[in-house]
Image 1 (cartoon, rainbow, N blue to C red):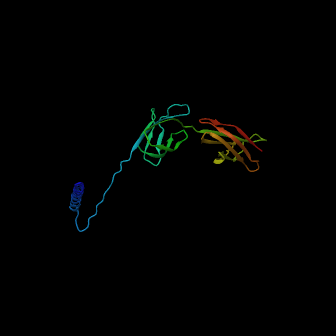
Image 2 (cartoon, rainbow, N blue to C red):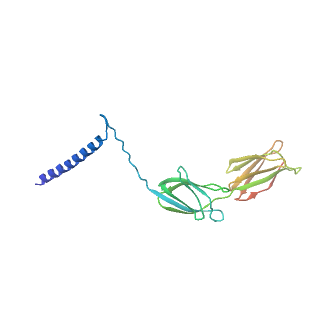
Length: 212
C-alpha cells in the first residue's frame, strides 16, 4: 500500500511539471517567427543601500557650512549645512570620502567601511593653510639678496621652489600645517639650511636669513 502511494505521488509531480513545461513552450513559441528562436532574460539585482550622516567642524570647533563631501568613485556628493550632511542610497562597501572647502586643507577619510546606517561622530577638523614670508640678506652688507633659490621640504620631500626678489623677499603660500625645512642656494654664497620651521593654520611665519 505504501509503495502504491509513493508511485501515485511521483506520478502527480511528473504530471505537474509536464503541464508547466508545455505551458512555457507554447508561450515562447507563440512569440517566435521562423525555425529558430532566441530568448533574452535579464535579472535585476536590488542592492541594499544605507545612509551616512555627520557633522564637520573647523579648528575652533564651529560647524562648517559649504563643505563639499564626495564619496569617490561614485556619483554621490553633498554640500554641508549648519546641521552637517546627509548622503543616502550608498551601496554597502569600502570607500574613500573627500571633504573640501575653499581656504582649508582637503580632508580624506580613507578606506571607510560603510555597511550600516551610520552617523559620523568624529569631529572632522579641516586645517587652514599657513604661509612662510621671509627675507634673505647679505650678512656683511645687510641688504637683500636677489635670485636666491629657496627649496622647501616637508617630511624630507621637496614641496616647492621659489626665488627671492630684488629686496631678498620670498614667500610660500597655502601651506599645510607642519614642520618644514629650507635650503637656500646662490652663486658666490655659501648654501644655507634651516630646519623645523613650524607652519600653523591661518598664520604667517616670518624671519630673516643671512647668507655670506
